[in-house]
Image (cartoon, rainbow, N blue to C red; front, side):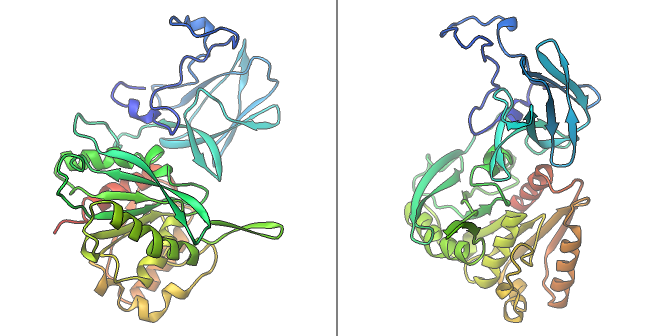
Length: 375
């Protein structure tokens, strides 16, 4: 990992590398750690971009590394399991299977995906938008709100811009930003690094300061012998009747349509489409990342009625849609193209290099932030 890209290690559990795990758990707290007494570095980025794994499983018989697209069996060398593979660039989710059991490796970064904790690594692409700058940084805070809709306490992540705590008379626009299926309110920060992307843009004068609000959109409900999601109407109601009023009462916002935006990736893009089409009076800016105007998960269609589509781009100041050129959901994106063309919905349409993955969504949020709240 090149110096200056240390930011790629950031997880919800640790900002720094987890590099002092003792091999002997019986050893008490010490100050000096010899390399041969701690777990080895779990991976290395080779000059050709391949990832070299070195995982400490001294008693294992078989170790398999799986990404969302491929699977690789490691080879045992002394106490460690090794192998070099081309996994691509950007955020790479890693699932480990040891002797038939799925597990988390403590020395690898830990994130959240597929409704569970996952390991990940980051191989920064050449034109990454998350390079750290020596600039002022905003604050990421956690807030808590009881929801009558879910009947649970909901946790909300917020990004407060650099000047928020300095100028206590200043008010700010708000972007409501949603994650994808199987993720949660932490992922835009821990995996997307949206706070650092926004810090850099603000310091460069490319974006205006704003608050970002990130909610858990995986609203689950239990009925008899099943757990089901309500990501459309229940989320729409929670956001519009509970979250927005809560944020605007507690934080220094403008509280009007002109200073509100909503965006999301994948499942979050569907939620964005549902909410902003049905509540055009609430938002002036919309971002649909790697995703969907139609709800391809549940088939919900109330938001794509003609009365909403006909007025969408008339009532919304700026609509941004984007996707990776190799995204597995490109056909759905192209079908939405036809729908929006039929109703003459004007919007910005971008394509990026990549699949259905974080490096695409990082470019999406980077470019979207450069366009909103400019007046």
